Image 1 (tube, rainbow, N blue to C red):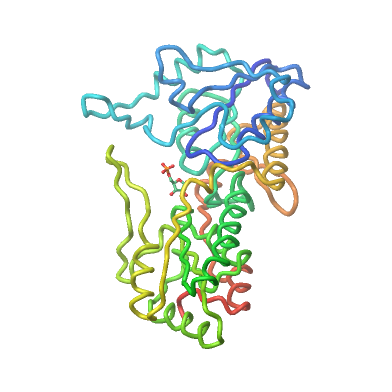
Image 2 (tube, rainbow, N blue to C red):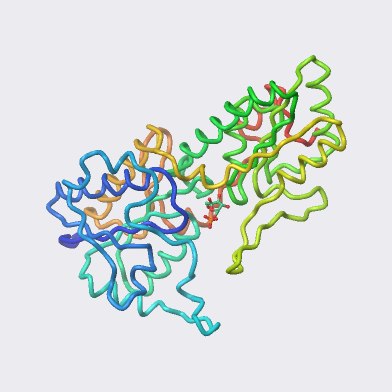
Length: 362
Ligand code: F6P
């Protein structure tokens, strides 16, 4: 028989995205209906690495509808500091699993809901197994690369922001006879660029999953110009490499590396090869920080309610997922293993080609 639940914890982990607060709201309301209390763990696993666990009790009155509309996460989050290999101030690395579990135990929780991407799910699952913690996962990531779910919280909003960026770039491109290049996030997956490129009327979409060549890119721009159109829109995923296979990185002062720079490279090459004037917009974190779209609010709400239901049923080590218009649950282990990049034969790739959009590989 499932254990009697009284107190559950919830934490957001990894990079933030729109819709996290809508998930938290759904969990708090749904848990309250069952007579449970919800404890929000602050700053992801970092909140359990402090002297005392950092948390606050989340009450339904706090979630009157305002919070659901807000981007970010009211709990805070972290996407650095692997707890199994944690960088210490003296330059050494330490496995801090035991500290996290000790602090979790202090909170006296009956189960925990972890909201995260594939990396966070892997970390949280390992911690849960080490500490015997009953855990349920909720997928969120603008990258939409978690396996076994057709959608993750945050993706829809990021695509909407990127689409709107193309909408805004088009008139200025047309006014100045320019090629506009929009560099978008997505880490190693091209889902954002592909979806926003189609929705935003791009002429060229470059994604890491499809190898491009510069001649094809230049030829497409020339073809567009030959039709009498004076501008072109290009959208490129941040992880797209140089044709020789070299990725573009930005290294920050603390040594962390992130993708970035392909847009500038393309702009120089396009200008050289076509004689067009080219400009670059790097959309960056704007994609993460908006009000969630209605789709993300719906997904977040369905996921939150389902996660609470799984806890009630005693179904742990599971991640909620979206499949065939329904919320279902899958093994966290399987979801992590089934990393989801863009399928080169997918409907959206075929749609782009059918529209005459260049994917740079003709
Ligand atoms: O995984 C989400 C994501 O926004 C990626 O698309 C991007 O590459 C990365 O996080 C940026 O990380 P940070 O917020 O640490 O700069």
